[in-house]
Image (cartoon, rainbow, N blue to C red; front, top):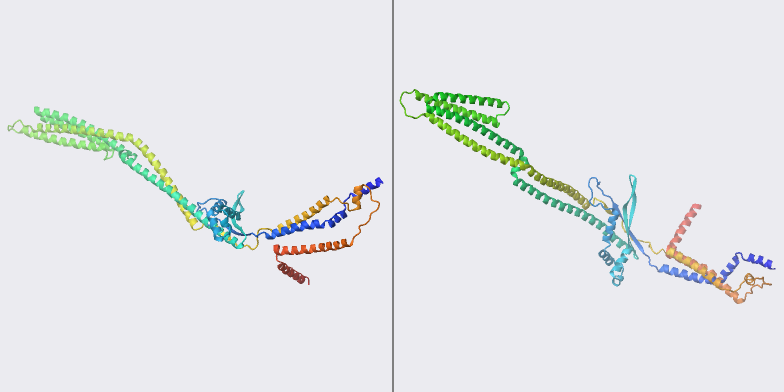
Length: 551
């Protein structure tokens, strides 16, 4: 007996679908009540949620129309970075408050809620998304921004479209304003810097002029002139020295002639003087001839030799005239006084020679002072040149900087013209905001599906919970499992008349459940997906096309 029970218990321990079906029949109300409650609650919540519409405008980031090799724009920031900056400038407190008041976005909340809360809510309703694209450049691939979208979510589709259009307009105008202002600031900055450098350049020019004025006698460009003047002064000293030497020799000859004239030996003395003078003239002419082969006619040595030869020839003429006068006097038998014209002539010539010697020596003194002055100037010229070179280097550096800034200023002006004429990179409204016809939130089908799934799970869970808590014995197998022994006899369940009525009532409820579910489903389709008349029309058209195709 025990062995038979064990085998029977093992057979009963397997999965019994009939027990599950029996439990479902008994506990269907425990399933339907939470299922319907949760499903109705999910439907009510889904229908009570306000639809949120989103209006979107697409703005294209168009690249510069003129090649950058010809004109380079001064606004070189990344489009993504510039979009972020413009977004911060557009979504300021002032702009958002103006939009809120202009379109009455928050209604009565504008008066009841703090301004900071309204601004925060407004910012949460606005969305700016960047559209990027990968661009191949050589062996690298870079991501560049080609467009961006501006969106606004609101309960009223018309207001959503108007606010989005206002935001798009602000983005476009702010971009133009920002780029133009950036280009203008660049041009103004370069112009101010160039003006500062021009002032410094003029100051250095004044310093150079003052420096040259202060050292006008010691300028490097006058070095060759000073060297020529030094050579000329030294040549003059040499010429004066030779002239003094010649005059002193002449003076000695004249003194000899004077002594001879006073002692009565005029003719011999005159002959000797004339011979000496003639010899000196010949020597000087030979020296002149020799120098002419090496020097030009304008050379100081040639000029000095010509002067000395002319002076000696004049002296020779005077000596000859004096000798002739003395000879005529000696041949005259008429007694005369003690007056001798030759003596007077010789004395006058000696006096003239002394005067010329004194003048030559004075000229030598002046020339030596001039030489010393020129030597001092020549010695100071390198120092002056060093200071002038420093000033000139500063001037050239400033001039180069001014030219470079003027070149950049011209480029900046071209860039500014490029921005003002809207030929540079710009924002173009690719797709204007439209009035949305379909809400983006809430997703009623998803919410209703989640609600139905939750309702079904709650119903199943409630049934399982009730079954676990109910300890009553409802079948022979449960009694056998409880007593550990099979029953002697099993009496079937006797259904009473009242139970039959309840069963009919339950059957009616079970039949009504699919009808109610179908009605609820049709209502959900009508309100959440598409109106039933439109679906009926589409189905009718599809059936008609199918019939035409088949027949």
